[in-house]
Length: 231
Image: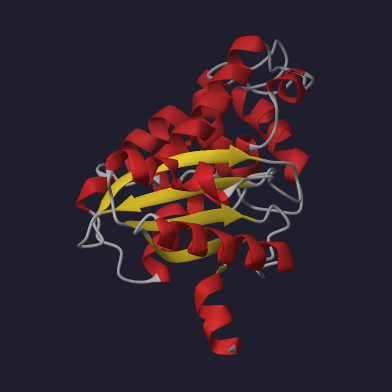
């Protein structure tokens, strides 16, 4: 029968180990065990955590808990409804921690600024998500908003839907951002075409489309910079 956590030396128990040495010295399974709290009749919480982590054998990352469903987690021995929900909540907290506390204090000066702002939120998404960043005359962010969520490969969207918020807020500048779930940030021909349509429609309302950024897995590309170089 496996040894219970309370039978382990104090320095090897996840709770006590974190308290004594700090969270950075804990393994992924030990950190996850703190969230799981209890094991099964014959296993410790660390054992259960290791079983959860075995789902993603090819990676040393905990990112997969943002993607795995509650139903998938519940199929793991030792993970019931409550523990599955706790694990998913932690994944969402981690995602939200990557967001700035106050977007309105951010001024966009380059495509890199956009990538820094939205990369961690979008890079692991399994569906395409299109966002707009509404800016004032000084390129200071006034609002970030989801406009559309598509499938794995595409989003159907019209320029009028993208410009609606700028028109309502009477803001002169706009950046469009969307992700490629494949991880490849290279703009498609349809990405380039819709960007040109948005740009032309925006000009009719006195709105400047500053850029359309495509987010991949750790990479990004600026469609406007790409098309300008090709001209």
